[in-house]
Amino acid sequence: MSNKHFYSISVSFFLVTMLCGALPIKHHGNQGTRRNKATYAIKNVNIIPMTLKNEVIHNATVVIRDNRIESINGQIPQGVEIIQGKGKWLVPGFIDMHVHVPTDFHIGAKLPTQEASVFFDIQDLMTPFIANGVTTIFNLNATMGSFSQRNAIARGNVIGPRMALAALIDGGQGTGRKVNTPSDGRQAVRSAKAEGYEFIKVYSALNVDTYQAIIDEAHAQGLKTIGHIPDAFQGKLKQAFVPYFGMVAHAEEFAKHSKDFSEQDAQQFAVMAKENATWLTPTLTALSWISSQVRSLEELRSSPTLQYVHPLLQSKWLTANNYHQDTTSERRDYFKKMVDFNKRLVRVFKRMGVPIVTGTDTGVSGVVAGFSMHDEMEQLVEAGLTPEEVLRSAASLPAVWLGLEGEIGTVEKGKRADLVLLDANPLEDVKNTRRIAGVVVNGQWLDKSSISKMLSELSNRNTAAKEKYDWNKVIGK
Image (cartoon, helix red, strand yellow):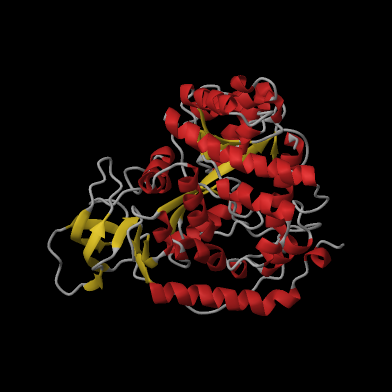
C-alpha cells in the first residue's frame, strides 16, 4: 500500500465531510438535562482521580458549582440536588485526540452574501460524543465553521464537548492551506495563528524543507504540531523527527515505513519518537475499520452505531466506499498485517516510554463519534496497555499535551466539571467505560435516561430521513 493511496483516502474523507450535511435534518426542542450554572453533589461515589498516584477515593462526595469541582469530601451546601453515586465510579471525561467534525459548507458557484448550501445540526454532531463520556475533542482539520460550533456550545445552545482546533497545512495544489516553499509554510502558520487556530497539523504532501519550516515556525508562534509523516521522508524517516514535532497522528505513519513489519523496525521507530519527545496517537480502531471494509462491508452494514451517523454519510459509506472498491486478496492481507503491526508498535512504544494518547479518527467510515472511543480503549488494552494506562491515555495525558492539565484530565478540586459516572470499575475491565450512568460535561449533568433519549431521538431522525439521501445522486453520479 503506497503513501499516495493513504493520502487519497484522506482527501476523499475531507470531501465527504464537506458534502454529507446537504439536505439537513431538522429537529426541535430542548434535549437532555441542562444545569450549566447549578450546584449539585455526587454522593457516596468511588473516585478514580487519574492523578499521578491515582489512589481511589472510596465513598466520596463531589460538589460541583458553576462548572467546577468545588470540593471533594467537603461540606454539602444546603438545598442542592443530590446525585446518588453509591456503588458507582467517577472518572475524568474522556478526550478524543483525533476527530474530524464536518461544518456548514457551500457547493458550486457562490454570489456575495450567499449562505451555505450544506448545513449540519450541531447538536446532532455532538450528541454521540457526550453520550459516550467524551467531553473534549481535538479537531485535526478544523475550519472557521468549527469556531462557530465551539461558540454554540459555549453559549449553551448546544450540549457538547470542549474543542481544540488544529489548522491543516499540506503541500501540492488545490484548495485549503497548500504550501510548497518554506516561506509560504511559515506564512501559513502565522495566518493560522492569526485566525485563532491553536495547533498545526502537517500533512502527507509537504516537501522536506517546507515541513521543517512549518514545525519551526509553529514553535516560534507558540503552537504545537501534530500530523502525518510526509511521503517525502520515504527512505529517510529519521529526518522527519525534527525538534518540536509534537505528535504522530496514526501508528500507520510508522508502519508505512516498514517493509516486513518486524520487531526491529518497531524498536527503531520507538527510539526515534522517544529521542525527539514525539508522542503517538495510534488510532487503532480506524485502521481496524478500514481493514474490515477492505474485506467486506457486512460488519459496517450491521454496526449498531451506524444509526447515529447522518444518513447521507451512511449512504456514502455503504454505496461508494473507497476502501472496498477494487479490493484484492493482497490488499486484504496487507491491511491485516498492518493492523497487527500497529498493535505491536503500541507495545514497543509503551516499553520505550513514549507517551500514547487515545484518538479515533472519527469520521472515517465505520468510526462513529463517541462510540469509537470505547473501541479504541479496548484495542489499546489488547495491544498491551493496562486499563489504568488506557484511562491515563484517555484523560490526563491528552490534557497535558493540549496544555489543559490545569483545567481538565483529573478529578480534583478546582478542575472543570468534565466527568463520567460509571456503573462498574474500569480499572478491573476497560469495557466498563461503556457502562455510563451519567456524564458531566462542562458542568452540565446528563443522567442515563437523558442520554438514552437524546440518542433515541437522533436515531429516529436519521432513520426517518434515510430514504431521502442517496450519496450518488447528491454528487451527481
